[in-house]
Image (cartoon, rainbow, N blue to C red):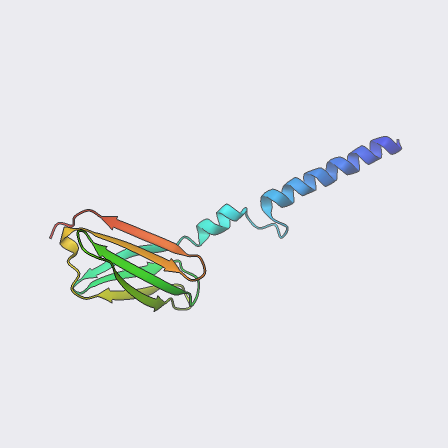
Length: 121
């Protein structure tokens, strides 16, 4: 009987270890699921002047936003996300009709981008 009891305890501890590895010690979701909840997004928000809106960034995160018109050089702005993790930033003299690529990189690991080949204007 002691051997059967030891095997049962061992099986329980292995199952517990697998559960913690898959679900986290606090019963939360797996790391990939937690990251998906914080998915940062960057989207155009207007065209005159060209504006982009970021969301899903960490609260008050410093963000470097670079907009590159097709055939042009990149224009970079720095902005700080608000308490909800959102921001809007304007880029003067950017013609979005010919295509635009945007990248936002946060100081705490948030990243987002978009690509428009050509916008019908």
